[in-house]
Amino acid sequence: MITTIDVALGERSYPVWIGPGLLEDTARWRAALRGRHALVISNTTVAPLYLDRVAKGLDGLRWSSFLLDDGEAHKTFDNVGRALDALSLLGATRDACVIALGGGVVGDLAGFTAACWMRGIDFIQMPTTLLSMVDSSVGGKTGVNLPAGKNLVGAFHQPRAVIADIDTLASLPDREYRAGLAEVVKGAAIGDLPFFEWLEQHAASIASRDSTTLIEAIARKVRYKAGVVARDETEQGERALLNLGHTFGHALETAGKYKTLLHGEGVAVGMVLAAQLSERLGMSGGADSARLLRLLTVLGLPTAIPAGMAPEQLLALMRLDKKNTAGMLRLILWRGIGRAEIVGGVQEDAVLSTLKAAIDT
Ligand SMILES: NC(=O)c1ccc[n+]([C@@H]2O[C@H](COP(=O)([O-])OP(=O)(O)OC[C@H]3O[C@@H](n4cnc5c(N)ncnc54)[C@H](O)[C@@H]3O)[C@@H](O)[C@H]2O)c1
Ligand SMILES: O=C(O)C(=O)C[C@@H](O)[C@H](O)[C@H](O)COP(=O)(O)O
Ligand SMILES: [Zn+2]
Image (cartoon, rainbow, N blue to C red; front, top):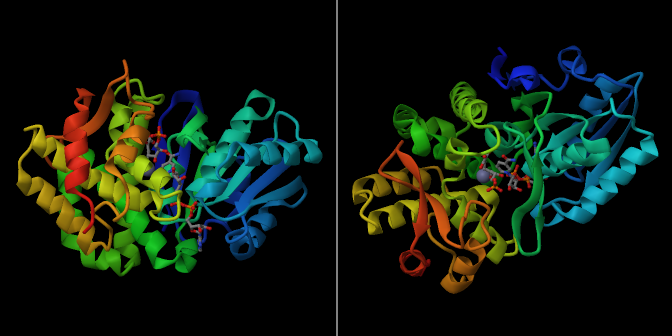
């Protein structure tokens, strides 16, 4: 059974298909290819596993592949340049399509490449991690990291379709699977208390990858995100809520040089820090923070800052976050589960105290 969720953006609307066997269902996604050229962007881990399935749908086209080395450290401007060179070698015209086959690193970089080539061509997301299925493939945020911080360069560029073939999750390592669950919990924590309760009740079957429960969890999170994106595509307001845990999380990822925490793990720790800071600022009580911490722990996610990270360095990285205005921190905090809020002018001493109290001992 295939679940379809529409991201409603007028003439740029697109479907998110979720279910088994989708990569091989080439007739379904081939319709999204308009021209004669396609570039598949993937990486050296995913391509040997799944590129052949995609290749079957590209018969009769001029296509090639561009493979990144594996890891967040390769989501760089240099690699966008190389991917653009691959498009020029292919002779890609404006009706060409970029296909992103992989996790969020591949998807963000491929989408940004598509946004840049000839000022914007089509791209299709084929997410192969849980995180990319529930989050990064949907909503059109594309981009790369700079040495100074995460996602500092990018563009909003929506895909033409998202093909989330859950069969690909069979080869996904457990740690990566759990990291994806953090972005599922995030959606519920921001604005969907019934979904949070459902996650608490189904935590054991989700952790054991029960497929029926998993498809429901993916679909609920994608439906939630699609709604936010449809109301605020370019983050003029409400969409910033999807950044719950991310100002802290991105700083943690960058401080660890992308070797200590995966993105989803950074988001898990970051959400706990946001909840703790909300308590410190008198916005919420401790019971909801404890509930969040418990759910993340049951799902096998970290909830404390790794030992050895310096709070002052984390704060310095947080100052470069894109949400900040007028030189002041602007964070996503909450009044409790399902009641996240955008809070500007956050005092740095409160943030620093929260960071100091949360170092793993
Ligand atoms: N654009 C957005 O809205 C958005 C949202 C969330 C996260 N992100 C970005 O996404 C990235 C994180 O994405 P991610 O967690 O998917 O990480 P990732 O892309 O690094 O993939 C995680 C790991 O799993 C491997 N992998 C992928 N699919 C596999 C499969 N089916 N079987 C075996 N191994 C597989 C990858 O090679 C990699 O080693 C970060 O850069 C983050 O900033 C973007
Ligand atoms: O789609 C969004 O909007 C998000 O914020 C989703 C996040 O999970 C994602 O990590 C995103 O890449 C963060 O964006 P950024 O604007 O903070 O770089
Ligand atoms: Zn994220």
